[in-house]
Length: 79
Image (cartoon, rainbow, N blue to C red; front, side, top):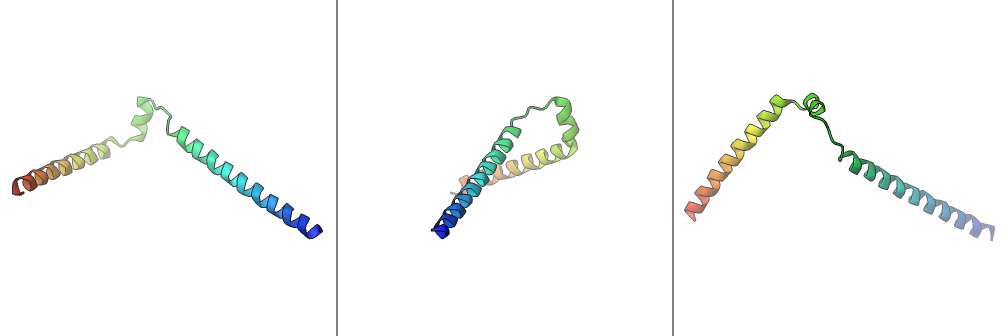
């Protein structure tokens, strides 16, 4: 009978650990979720953002979209 009690205690402990881990995951997710809702001032963003690199990336994306638009128009004319 004491073996059964040990088994039940072990099972109960395992369930408690599993429940605790699930709570930690939930807490981590909530912290991540709410951290994404922070608002930043223009000064904070200016310190963090590399404006030159951002403009380069925007220019690349504009060029890509322009060339893609040309490809779509060519495709429409062929078919």
